[in-house]
Image 1 (spheres, helix red, strand yellow):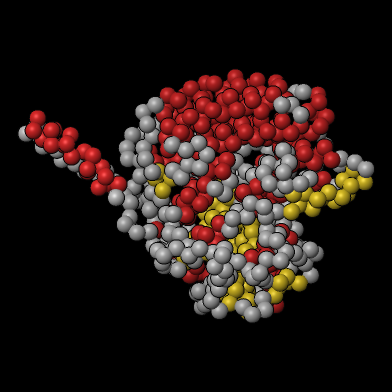
Image 2: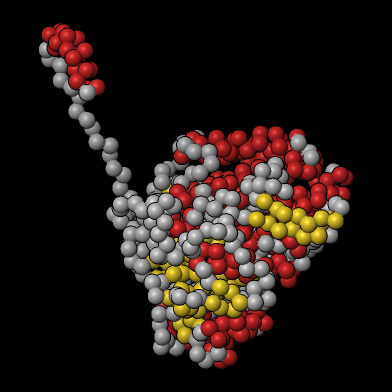
Length: 215
Length: 355
């Protein structure tokens, strides 16, 4: 309606303009020139440190049931085929979880002394608890996974081994609902204590809080 | 110490158990700024998530963007041209100096020296003006893209950076004269909050907190990313691990950043600022991890992709979260005023904590 009002107002001045300037042609809109960029070759980020083969062999010597994530039958020699930047991602069972982590803490040849974080990923049928380690001396990393049942996810705590895990486990409990046994202080860390549900799970649907975009 | 407090660097609630003025236990209550960024990131495309990473630790937003873009480049194998790399390094170091200047000003103000707040911000404005001319924003830049940066730097950029280097060198001397030799400051920070090496590693601390306890780990040196291996800079460490060590380490970090900037400005190349952009960013199935050194510590970005246009799970390993978990151990036995000192030197930002 505003456009119609404006047309009515401007009718007389527009007619006057057309009479005064009969040869006026409006300027053509010029498209901004699109910059072209070339492709640049990717430089892979090669980390120094103990290579994946040694780490895998050391761990497999003590815990023979571990396997690499999504590569069930790979042997230590073939780990190089997974890529130059591949960080070793090991799947461990629930019984071996705590013994493996205390082995990693004590094993000086691996040198993995810093706990980066402990988190979880919600696949549709199970929940994966992931633990990431870093070695400050040798700068190699190791990722460990453990699959948990979705209905009652429970696993042992590692806050006695790596003290930083205390807060990370609280966060996983808060957002995913994974219960950690023998944890010194398991309570919600971010959300308030009576928050319904566990937000980071894939089936968390709260129309008031979660806004799904159409694209 | 409630959520609204001038010294908690954000919205953080600490419940203190006291005996007179001595602290028996500190329990932090987080979550006042929890925005659920990791859940939001699952609903947005990969490029849209770059602006989310700005808001993680808003004082080092360029570096956060860099970590996320590096993870994407690792997945899609996108290279970055020379000028793009130089822009990334220079902006990261400028951001680090800017963040440390704010930290210095605010920590002086926490301890009672209110003039440091205004002095620190005087030089900080120069750097913020550079950022404003670059991308229009002073705080959350959203400037880097996978493959380089969003736009090229303007012609005045090099001149302004040279001006900043010239101004910062005598300014750093001034700041050191103001606080580092000050007897009151020394009394308040020496032997407060001593962090041993084993505890620092066990709790997962990073950045200045870790280096002050004797572990020499800097992502720029040890786990070199971008073109940091071409620049010469030192990574200082200290042995005691008390508040004064963390403080002096950060002042030296600023000097080292100036060194990197000097070297970068001398050899700033011409050329394109980014590589070819793709029509759609769809990461192949797999998981990708990249680390960067922000002004707070080690920021890790872990992307789990399932082949679509949106990520399946994004996890930000924030440095402030791990750095703050040692608060209870550090502050037992000290007085209330010492908690403020410890909080100031731990250098955390609450949005980084809560994500």
